[in-house]
Image 1 (cartoon, rainbow, N blue to C red):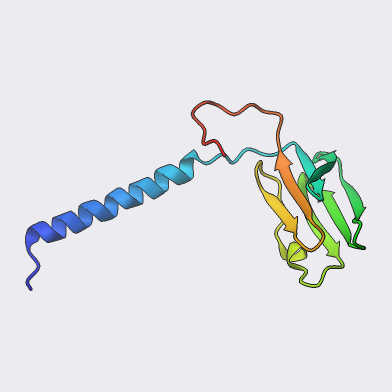
Image 2 (image 1 turned 90 degrees about the vertical axis):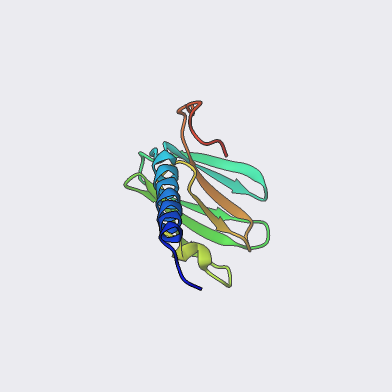
Length: 125
């Protein structure tokens, strides 16, 4: 089978169209800084902390789980957990709206949120 000139044109058009879609989607995503950290434990809101105030928060769950969260430089990260897999402690620090850290064995969920209202043109989750 021989490749014709029109086949090459179609391949380039499809490639550049898909590249343009990736760039457009990436530029539309909200990269807004978060204002506070919402902590949920066992599916219920446990606490909210302002990301502008540096602090260390220790949380104990009903099943004996212990987690330590550090809020520093407008970012939050899990610095200690006594769970078996320790995946949550290896997650990078979060500071932008919508970013999360989850500790599944302790049923602990951290999410950065903001008081700012979303524009109509933004992607809704």
